[in-house]
Structure formats: C-alpha cells, structure tokens
Image (cartoon, rainbow, N blue to C red; front, side, top):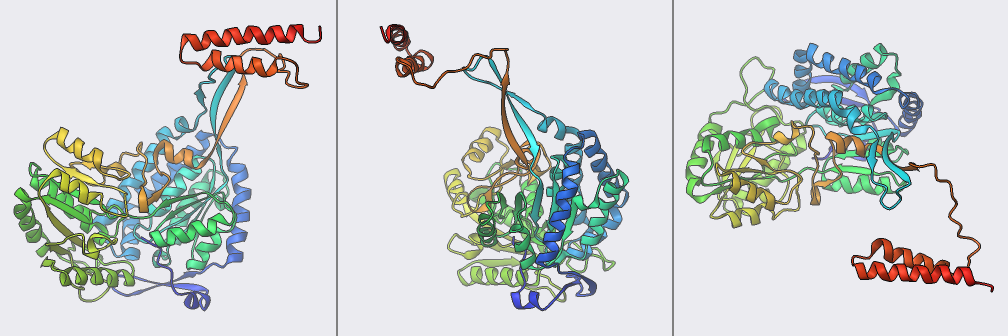
Length: 531
C-alpha cells in the first residue's frame, strides 16, 4: 500500500509531522519534516560513512547485526508496545512483525557472507582464462517505506544493505514516524558500540516531498514499497538520475480452498491472512475462492468466528482481537469498497461498517462476491474477508489469475499433487501450500511479485545480490601471453575467423569438418600471400 502522502499545501506549511495513536487519537508528539537540503546533507554524510564501511570484513558486519538482534530480543516488550502505539495493531500482531525480522537477522548472520563471496563461473571456450562473479557494494541504498509494519519495513531493507557493504537511508511513512527516533537508536547503539559511524543508517522523516527528494538525490538504488500509482511516480523520478529501483507494490492475493482441504486449517489461515494488522498487509488473502462442496461449511465457520471478535484500543487494558487502522483515509477506502460490493449484490455476514471511536473498520465477512465488484479488483488493505464460490480447479485458477496484481497466493488441499498442480498455474511471485505467507519466514527464498505487484526481489541471496554491483571478472588461468594480432589486417584473417566459428559451434560433424577444411584454406592463403 502507498505511503499516503499528505497534500502538498499541508506539507509546505509544516516543518514537523504531528503524530497520534490511531487507536485512541491521542497525540504522541512531533518529529521533523526534513526538507530537500537536509536529505542532501544526510546523503553526503552517508557516502562518507559507506566508504569506510565498504572496507569492513563480514565478521565486522556480523558483529553489528548481532547487536541489533540482541537489542530486539532484550527490548521485545518495549518495541511491541511501540509498534502497537504507532500503527494501531494489537500486541499479538506486533509479535508477528518481530518474527520475520528476527529470522531475517539470523539468516543474514549465518548466510550473507556465503551468498556474497565470489562465485566461480565457466569461461566457455576460453580455456586459458578463469571466470568469476564478484559482489561489490553499490553505495547508498534508499528505501521508501509504508506504514503497515513500522519496525519490519525499516529493518528489512537496512540489514541486507549493511551486509552487502552499503549505507541505508530509510524514509518512513509520515503516518508512523513517531517510532522512527526509537528505531534509529537501535542502529546507532549497535554501530557506535563497534566503532562505526551512525551516519551509515539514517531514518528520514517527512511528507511526500521528502521521499521524492530522497529518490532524486542521486542514491545508488531505491527500494520502494507502496501502491502501484506511487510506484510509477517513483520510477519517473528515479529515471531522471538513472537510479535503479526495486518495486514491491502490494497485491490482491488469492487463496484457493479445495473440496478436499482441511477446513479447520484453511479457515484459520484465512483469518490470519485477512485480519492480521487489520488486513493492512501486502500479502493479505483478499480473494478467497472456496469449492462448492465445502463452501457453506467454510463460510458458516468464518462468519461464526468473525462475528464474535473484539475490536478496540490494543493497549487499553482489555483483550482485543483486531486493532485500529493506521491511516484515516484507508478506512474510507475500505468503506467505499464494501459499499460497492453490497450495491452489486454481495451480502455481509459479519461486520461491514466503521467501528466506534478511533480509526476502526469492523472485521467483515462478505459473500456472494464476484469479479464485477471493485473489492475483487482493487487492493482493500483492510479487515475484509471476501469469499467467492467456485466449482472446479479450472475456474479457481482462472479467477486467481484474473487480476492486475501478482504478489503471493495460497492453495489448500490434502492432495499434494493436486495442490502442486494448481500452484504451478497461478501467476504470482510466490505460492504457499496449506499455509499462509510462510514463504516470508523461509528467508532463503526471494520475495517480490509480478504484474502490478512490481519487480525485483528482496530477501535471501537474490536480495543481497540485488543490492550489489554484480561484477564479471576474467583473469588468467594459464600464463599464456600471446597477443591476438588483429591489426593490420592480413590475408586470410576473415576466412580464418569464419572457419573457427564452424569448428567451435557447428552442431554436426560435417559442419566441423567443413570448418577444418576452411581453416586449411585460410592458412594457405596467408602463407602464399605476396608470393
């Protein structure tokens, strides 16, 4: 989802960002809204810090990252409350945010060096040469973050950037900027303790103009997570400086529940996939296709559970199942999409309206939906479970692929071969069988999408290498220093070159034999030239 830029007139009139708790409306204070000059000055400091950091060993980098991991574990309660207060999500959902962060840190500590060490490569027909691929730091990586995961969205790009030898400048959303100084402290303490500049990782706060200034400042790569519309704007700005971009543009992920699925397993994954962080996650299961034979059972179970869920301020003292929504305008979007679906024939079995006080939309179950409704086309990013009946694998696959997006997907079936068959035909960056979003916990796997969900990959070896200058190197294998004499052109040179092509690359013995004959003719032409 996008980082929800405020109107330009508002941004221009303010040098600070007012922060508030979305669950209660309570004021949390202010943070600076950095201008273009501040961004440029910070970039210059980041470049100085990165020049020294690029020379560090992986052992030195691991010591910093290890300190960050230990800090997260030592301050879990504090950080979960920070996340909850800034974004409106429950403490339980805040721990869900902590899990992939810790796994990402563990994986980088264990595997980043191996992923970025020089890789031997074939030198092909150049048998006297050796080839390898090297991974060098790019420089300064910029990331533009949304508001749905205040801590994870910062660490997810910053840690691989550091492990690859880069500096990181992370522009956080204006809607979750209150937590930025505390998150900055995590990096500052770890870097300072190991003797490195705190300019190496800098959190940037501001409105849309601040993000645009960062993208256009001349950084070495941009990671943008947000809406399709804002992704296009980032590309336009980055194109002016030929800055490469990784785009993660959200999704409209399908979940397919087959007639042989474990219904208990499927429905609880559907609840996780739609209600976690009040549905504000890019991998949310926003389209659930349930086979006709189990549709009624599935719908009845989901409606029964959702109808009894509790919603309210997560830190208010009582038990809360679903928290608040982070951005006021997102509540409006969810309300509009649900109203459009009902207008076109959908039925509400639970929820369906704004909750009282704060920024709430009730956990909602929608049935009788179809692809003529906007809620099955546009990203909802809210706590809505939209369920559609299907009658065959073919229909389920066709509907799953009938989308402008292609981020993630899931399939539920007890028949492994069947689930694999369906998964292969879904157009998406990932498919999880009999679970929801667990590919994000398997950090060896790349993360990203296709179609309107963006391009480029994060996480794992591919993510690390995507933040590197991938450099090809050819060197001597044998001490052969004979020069290839091309100039001046001598008789038979063209014929000799053509003969070598046939000898090396012909797929038939006759072709190679013809090349040998042509080579003899070329050598004879050269030998008799001038006689």
